[in-house]
Image 1 (cartoon, helix red, strand yellow):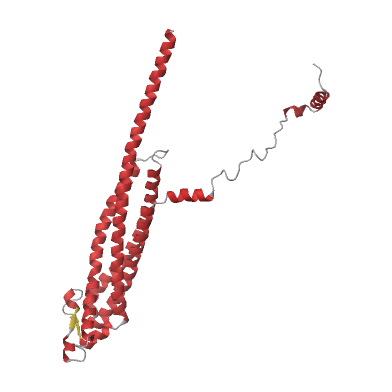
Image 2 (cartoon, rainbow, N blue to C red):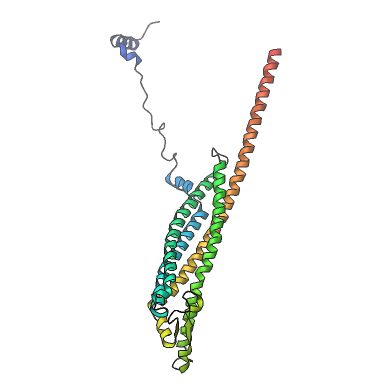
Length: 309
């Protein structure tokens, strides 16, 4: 075969430069070979995917829990301090009479600090557990595998949330007691301010005795305030602020109870989903194992038939 002039020139070039034989020429990709930016997932699709994994129910319960605990702790702390000031200035002038009450209120303020810290951490943990169970439920047929430890932790959260919910029911009832006391004092002041009793001699016979509530001993002096002196107490800023702050604290305790009930429903539902997911995984594993054994039997039978033929 006669070589062309171009082939002869290429051969002479390789003979003069032996290292050029291993050189590979890579074609320049054309515009059609390049990946189009429209073919890759955009920001909108990624946002939709991320939003699909958000546990909205747990998020709402967490916000409600944080709001309720913050209202109860913040308003309750300030209202307790105002209550002590009212008692010291008007109902119990002797410090030794309400010393025990002052210690109890100070202890309750420290307990409020602990409640706020604990529920801040517990709410974050429950929200994280909501993210975990949401991912588990959405990826039942993928590579995600639920473990016995994860299901045990979910069950523990269900039990702990139930106990906390019962405890907060007691806190809610207890927070209604100072609201009732301040309401009685406020309603008595309204009776004094009414036109039927205002300016009459019977005003001084309308009294409020806080000793009957058990917050100060019976030997406390004066313990009972009547008439215009009681009206002056109701007009003070300490009474006005403490009364309304106790109302807000009671509402915060109720909101916390609702949030814990919401959390309890979410955790129970997620635990049931994880339990069903574990059963489904066990079924799929057994089914895959049986299919593999069936394929092995079929392959061995084919090999035996081929050996006979």
